[in-house]
Length: 626
Image (cartoon, rainbow, N blue to C red):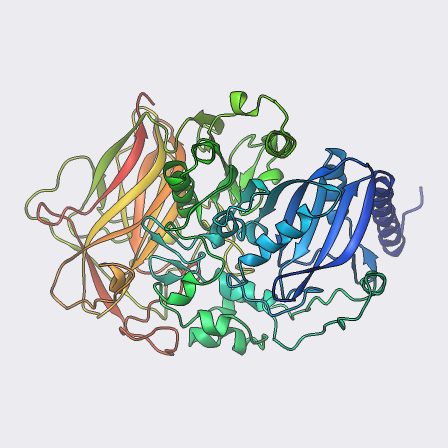
């Protein structure tokens, strides 16, 4: 048999792919009216590029609406793309119109783009325009993941009469302040910058000067032009494992020859800056008016604040129907990777077993209920909370998050003063600490930070690979304190928020303290579950900065972590404590300065106290009877 040349194979593969894309489009055109590059007007005259796919019927239909900063143009580099066509085919086949729109200032949409700062009224105006169309039945559901989800919460606060239901997935960057979390759209965790936005904005933000089509261009002309121009910037690739090390932080994108944009104004903000409260973020002092089906994942960047928002809405929505119709799924996957689960789902290095779920079936049943008014059995057969427990690798259900049968258990940190590294003497115990115990100490050098290895991340390019990885080699560092329980004789399920209280000291005016939650296997493998951080200057609240003094002890409470994990017999619970987790979080240069404009740092000599006077501890949610 003759071998097929590489060139022939590539040609054949390209031909088959192109045929498959055209096949999807033909199937869609057979059942749908395809109306692309509709320039939808907003109240200030700015027009947003919108593609509409609706069933060929004389009867009005409900709308699934998706607004995004990402490129959904049907053509790119001279080739047809069928992602949106496939999504439209699915929606139209279920009796819905799919409407996809670019945020202002993105691609064919007019105006200036500002992540988290685009007018919330754009969503409201889009709903009003759609309900005036003869083919719309007046019911709109919103759907999307990540930046296609994050605008939904603030718009839900406006309670447009047509906004009947929503499905936000991996939506953390739309959450400003909720409860204990002042993350301002995932920009911060505990007052430290989450560097995902630095890498993401390099490839996403655009200069105010960008190619745009003239206002007098007709829809026909725009559709034709979209075959040749998608207006997408093509940024040179950057190795962010090196690029994020540049100082000062405010010049990282400039140093990579990136475009100017919103990063320059966001990097200088503090957690309580008034500008965070002016744009498209949802804060917990705002109303909420929409039944919602929420999707969260354990190895995403914002699991804990996302779950805090879910509970906030269930408790505080004023409309009982809205309050009682909040549903939640928590998957063991990476950011927006729900449907990538397989029969043997590997997240990082750890197997989660079969983590698949019938997502499409549930989502369309949800929309059928609220947008079509069908009397289906969604509310009867769907639990309020569906969550995946790692370790036992199974889906579970509950009426609340955390489950009602959770009991908070306190584990105290203790050691003989030598908890440094995996080989130290750090322990976690349920016994209260003795009166006199020696503190653990380590030196944190911002020029030699603890590297991020796996974790609950998103969008950092080559800098951090998300997921669960064996940490035991990392734990050989002297600047990581390691505290472990004895192996569990019986299995223990931990499902819910994890609270951390530390008593700390430092010879620096300001420094960070990090915590990582670990499942230790009998053979020594140590898989990360969640992680958190606190910039010490914010220990008294994110609306003020208070410096540390040498020789003093300070009580700090870190933003809660969260997980659902089964510790099988022989496994141990472990926490790692340090002062850096880079580049998941930016490095504290320890000077007490602004940090974002500094080029050099100083070494901080930090301490963790654990005695009867200073009982450093974590509180974990153990499920009774497991």
